[in-house]
Amino acid sequence: MVLADIATNPKPISAGEFAQKVADAVVMLINSVSGVIIPIATLSLLVSIIMFIVGSFTQSSSIKKAGASGIGATILGLVLYYAAPTILSLLSSLQLIFK
Image (tube, rainbow, N blue to C red):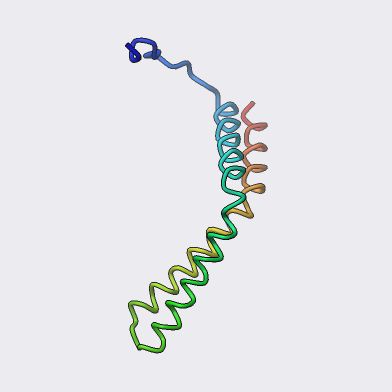
């Protein structure tokens, strides 16, 4: 049975090890989405701009809000994507503090 092989008491790790594992996971995530993030963000931004324009022409505040929210979410996602190296360096410096 597979469940019998799982340890019931995992060993504790230090804050530095935790920061390193989180940084490694974020680097793996960034590397896996780096090829598709810009096309997806471009498509999302175009759809959101079209929704905003259509909402302006039809005087629909809900469509306009959805378009503006999409624009904001796309820009926030791109900022976080490009700020990821800075965030990782902050995690690395925190790791050095807690060693």
